[in-house]
Image (tube, rainbow, N blue to C red; front, side, top):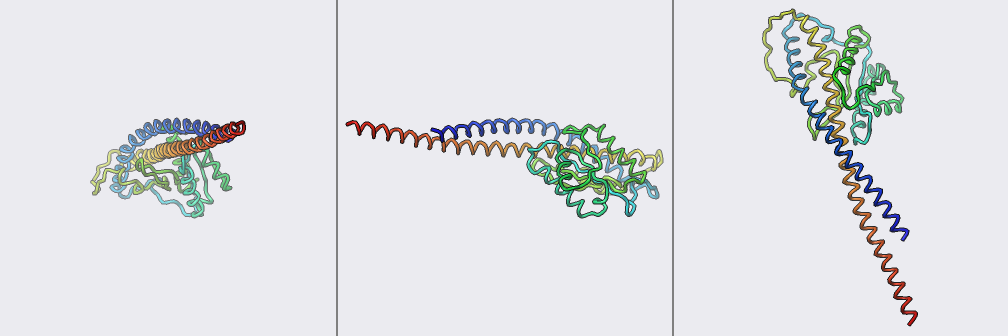
Length: 292
């Protein structure tokens, strides 16, 4: 009897876990739908802005802009690592942090530069690897607002223009589709228009001739910071969507595994119970036979 009761307790625990993971899967699915809509809505704007800046930068010959310049040799590099605050999202955080560690260990400028991180999970792993964190941004959560991202991007632009940092790179999860996400290292500053995906541009093959009004330098002063902010915001949006997908898949897998374990425990319980019933019947029959 004790063995069957123990199995019953395990069955109850597995059932509770299954209900929890199924609920978390449903919540992740709901959040994913909203985050995906936000990420997809911002892509046309980001792509059109990048395409415009690329064409203007190519047409404005002789115009020099600080955000388009090459990084000074020996300048400090700033690396921003975007992870999540919560776990239970499969390999999401591990993939991003591994990519960040590979980049930091492979690049002396990144290793000797400034490391900033978004998300508690990434901060914990980096501290465990004895990497100094210059700033831990906790204000974004899983619903990054453009105002907050814009302030962060403007801070990077100001520090880059002042010569405090020479390169800004972002390590985050890139969202391509529901079935494909990939960690990447993206150069945010100095601005590189060719770093944008083909799917984010309008695909113009030739550079048109422009008559600038106001002048090209004035236009680039306005459009380049806007493009940098839009790119960083897209990185945050892609990271949030990828996190929800990873959690949705992980919770579905956990729910399926809990269901399989529940069925296995049910069979084990039935066998244990049948064994107990057989033993009891044998004892009854043996006792009745002894009385004859």
